[in-house]
Length: 161
Image 1 (cartoon, rainbow, N blue to C red):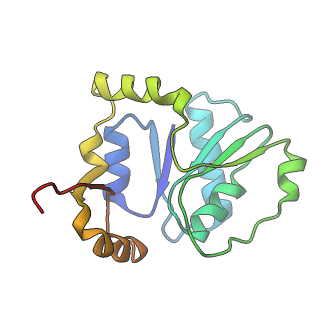
Image 2 (cartoon, rainbow, N blue to C red):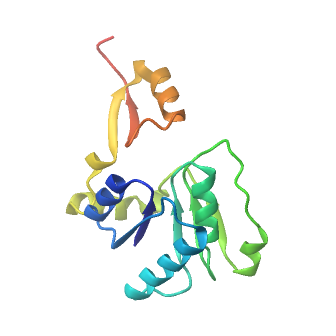
């Protein structure tokens, strides 16, 4: 598994949670990123085809990068949300016999696998998730739109109010 980001702290967190290799894409051209991914995939013994690409940045630039990493029979899952409109050539899906899936997160049929990763300690949720009182919902929404959080915020009821 390869993680791409522009934040070294996030990449270190990914590496400590089972990612095999990381790429800091800050300042890199698309061609350079694609070549680095291909190089790392070869080093990891990964097939050139059938990649599973998961985009979670919620930015048009991140979604464009993910789309441009599609190779033959790839599946791209878009999880990150943005109001911006990425510029992509949809014909690539046809040309590469690839799939594009939009999802809010993990499919229910994968819950067991995800829970197994958490139970084994390979995936540490505290590195990625923070809970906050639901009475701060407006603050959380505003801060989320401004990309102020490093972690996924989960709103929980505050039964004391």
